[in-house]
Structure formats: structure tokens, C-alpha cells
Image (cartoon, rainbow, N blue to C red; front, side, top):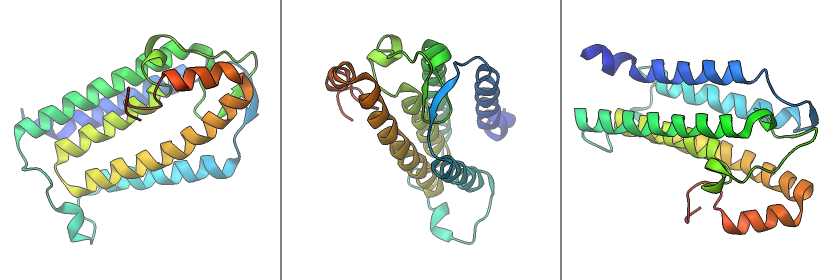
Length: 190
């Protein structure tokens, strides 16, 4: 059973990323793409997060303080939240279909999707990814997990703000109405 603790999150995240990569091949042509600087900044933050979660010892003691007592219940609760979050992101990605892009874009013949997971949150892929990192933080029980979650939250929030502006420009009143009805990330909250 010890292997579950050692490999669960690596297997789940690698499976998620492989799915993401395979699905990225079937998308519409890009009409407008965000600047390279924001894409590079996002990639760098994700590299920092991966290092923070993967390397066993940074020379910063407070990163290893526990905000929860390490226990099997924390691990399995975190594993369940991560799994549910990533499955939610997969559902959103599948529902978005060929309109999806890993960068902020406007696609040719771009459609505003407001059904399925998009009726629950305007950015359900981000919701799912954030839940995945929050679950890891709970399972790790260490401050470094919370720091990683916050870094991902801020970089996705920046990306979300750019997407919101582009969607408002592209879809006008339809997007404004949709954004008043559906929360950005957390239903009825945020």
C-alpha cells in the first residue's frame, strides 16, 4: 500500500497531462493569440510549482511546516479532491471541443459554450486544475503545497482576466449576460 502514497499523484497528473497533449491536436485554427510573454511567465510559474512539489528539500524551513497533521485521512481526502478536480477539467475540456486552446486565443468560428460544466463555472478547466492542486496541498499537509496552490491560482487568475476581456470583446452582450449568471471559478462565490 505504501506505493499509493509514493506514486498516486505522479500517475494522476501524468495521465492528465498525456490526455491534454493528445486532445490538443484536434482544435480549430487560431485567429488571435496572447503575447508570448504571458505564455512564458505562466510556463515559468508552473515549473516553479513542479519543483516546489517535487523536490524533497528546499533550504527554506517554513515550506515544510504542517498546516494539517499528516495522516492517511488527509492523503485520501486530498487524493479524492485532486481526482474529482482533474476529472471535472477533463469533462470541461471534452465539452469545449475544438474551441479549446492552452493559450488565450480566439479561434476561427469561435463559439461561446455555456452548457455542461460551463453552466457551473465560466472557467471550469481552471476550477478543476485548482481543485487538483488544492487536493495535493491537503494530501501533503505542508505549507509548500499551499504556496504551490496560490502560485497556480494567481497565474490562472491573470490568464482568466485576459480571457474575460477577449470574450467580452468577441461576444459582447451575450458574454456579459453569461458572466452575470455564472461565476468564474467557484459556483455562487467567485
